[in-house]
Image (cartoon, rainbow, N blue to C red; front, side, top):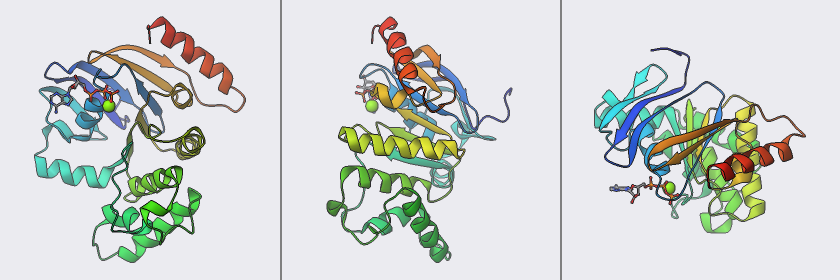
Length: 245
Ligand SMILES: Nc1ncnc2c1ncn2[C@@H]1O[C@H](COP(=O)(O)OP(=O)(O)OP(=O)(O)O)[C@@H](O)[C@H]1O
Ligand SMILES: [Mg+2]
């Protein structure tokens, strides 16, 4: 296939009537937003990309692996190693403290100590050091979502998938979480994110617009340079208005 360096390639992906021939690809270090009306297939697209659900047609490649060809077990193993997930409903376990939640995807491997060092490092980087022993009910929404991002990073994934990661947060917490994604992306993380939030999407390099399971438009905003935020928001706003958002 062309574009062999792509982190993610989606080719003619179909899922019953929900996704119709969706094609796009993402290069290393790209951050792309998926927008579109409720029910347009955004979450379904993420589930398909992650191999959590079986496609009816088309291909999904992550690096050199065609995940649409793997067995269910192979997909589960691949997902754990290569993809990080962040959801709106954060899916943290209430019987574990913050650090143990973050370490969960690392499993009971012999190198648990190594994972713990890395987990603490991630917490420091995402400015939530000191919360290791707290219960999940004892931290703010923004802190909890940043802990979820730490959890998504614990196995050094090639690709991060996020479904409405700021959807359950107030404005301040949403801004903290988005700043975190921007910082990770600056360091080279490849991130595909579903969002309804214009401000969040305007920080991404590219925005895909999904309607009725089809990509109806793509906006390239380019790299996020300091001082261009307002301009990006305006461009995105005009584009969305033209798409009858
Ligand atoms: N497991 C499923 N089986 C059948 N239909 C489904 C399933 N999951 C979702 N759908 C349907 O597929 C369509 C797309 O749903 P999806 O959750 O992908 O939308 P979305 O764009 O993420 O919406 P929202 O913005 O509300 O989260 C909807 O019509 C939904 O009812
Ligand atoms: Mg959804």
